[in-house]
Image (tube, rainbow, N blue to C red; front, side, top):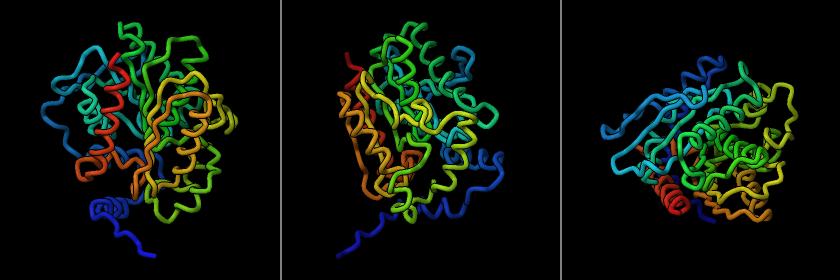
Length: 299
C-alpha cells in the first residue's frame, strides 16, 4: 500500500501551527487565534464597515460587484470561547467575494463569560436584524466554521422553532455539532489533526454549556430533529477529528428530507479555509462555497 505524499502547502500550515502551540491561558488562546487568522492582509478592494445587529457587534464586508440584496450572516469559529471579527475577516471577505454578496459577521458573546444560550440568542438576533433591514429570507445565508458551524445549525433550528421565515441556505465548515465528542474520528484522526483534540474540546464544551446538557439539541445539533432546515453545504477535511460528526450530521439532515451537499476534502485539516491566502485547497473550498451560495440565493 502506497502513502500519498502530503501537500507541501498543507505541511507549511502544519509547521505554522506547530510553531504556535495553543497556550493554557484563555486570554492568550484568544490572542493566538486572532493572530492566526488575522495575519493575512485584507485585499485593498474590500470595504469594511462596523455595525450593530440588534445590539450585537458586527461587521459588514463587501467586495466589488457584490449584490447588495443578498447577504451571508457569518458566525466565526473558536470553540465558543475564542475567535472574533479579526480572526476570520479575510476568510469571510473572500467568501463574500466568491459568492458575489455582502457579508455580515457577528461578534457574538463568548463563554465562559457568556455561556449557552447567549451565542444562539445573538445569532438569532443577527438574523432578525437582517429581516428587519429589508432582506428577503430567501436572499439570506447563514454560515460558520467549527463552533460557528455548530452555531449555524443551532441558529437554523431556533429560527425554525420560533416560527421565523427560514433563510435560503446554510453553510457549515468543519462543524462542531457533538459537544460530547463521541465520534470515532476523535481517536482515528487524532494524530493527523493539528488544530483540535478531544481533551481540548471537552474542556471548552464545559465552559460553553454552563449548566446545559451536552445533548441539548441547541448545544449539540447532531441530537436535533433536523426536519425543515434549508439546503445545506457541509465541508469537512479528511484529516480532522471532527470528520465523523460532520458526515453524520449531513447524513441525518439528508434522512430528514433536507437537501444536503457534503464535501470531504482529502488531507485537509480543521477549517483549512482560514489559510486560503497560502493554501490552494482553501481557495478552492471557498470557491465551491461561493458557487453554492450563489445558486441557493439566486431566486
